[in-house]
Length: 104
Picture 1 (cartoon, rainbow, N blue to C red):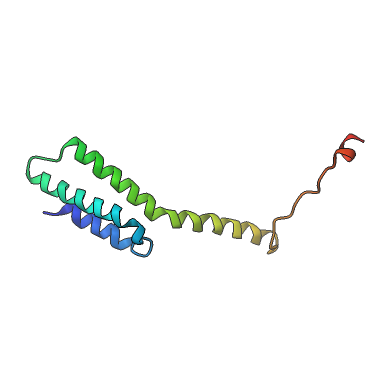
Picture 2 (picture 1 turned 90 degrees about the horizontal axis):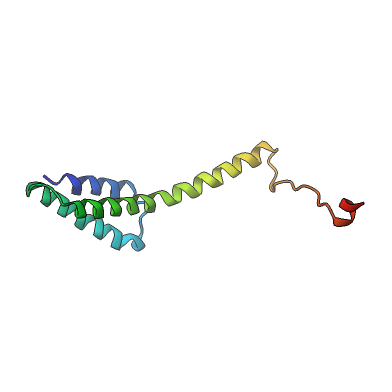
C-alpha cells in the first residue's frame, strides 16, 4: 500500500499552480522519501532518521506552498485598510516636527 506516495501526490497536485521548476529537487526528494516510507512500512516500520528526513522535507514543501498565500494576505489587508480611509492611494503622513519648532 502506497499511503505516503498517494498523499504526497495529492499535496503536489493541490499546489500545482504554485510549484515551479525551482522546486524540482524538493519534489524529487519528497517522492523518494515517501517511497522509502511506504517500503519500510512492510519491513517493520521506518527508522527514526527516515521519519525525521521525511518530516523535514514535508515542512519545506509546506513552506514552498505557503509563500504566495502569505504575500496575498498582506497585500489584501493593506488594500482593506486603504479602503477604510476613503480609498486614498497613499497612507496619510503626520506633519514633520523640525528641531527649531520642537525646541521653541
